[in-house]
Image (cartoon, rainbow, N blue to C red; front, top):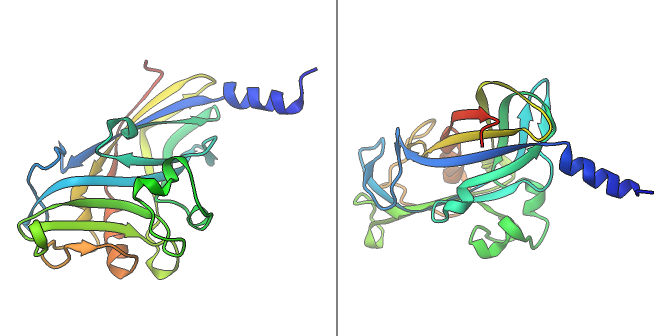
Length: 238
């Protein structure tokens, strides 16, 4: 006789659809090339040497929000192409949008040493009281007054008025009906220009280094909450 735990495990594994999500880094409408010079909204040149961010708590929206199964915490790293395509499992259903958290939720920030994507060895964790760096952007700009014209933005803060956690909601190009073992492919564009413009204009000359929680980090997070755009969603393609 099969145990209940074994039956539940088999159901969890089989009675799901797969959603593959590919993140494509852009500057405006063009795909970003590391260390290539671009121009931000303050007419400052900038070239990116490092870009990393956390996405987590994935959900699909139909008649309500359905949480993805399993541990959905991912570190997207521009230096590692493998991290830019992730996979989640979702219950079969009718869906019209995808939702995820940009950053690491408050519970995981205070849960002690983590493993996998949340391992501090990835260089995205400060201390137990300041928590995770939600997103990191580094590079060079002639507008920067720092040594070697460097700029660095390490954005974090998970509580209080300067909380930088952002829910991202993206409508699919058209509603989809996912059955057991179906496969949905989603491509999401990530526009770096949004770091510098939006609710607040950020000048590299004036703010070339933000590396702790606070009002300045909150301003950038308010900006980059708009950097995600759904490019396409294709069901049941290999």
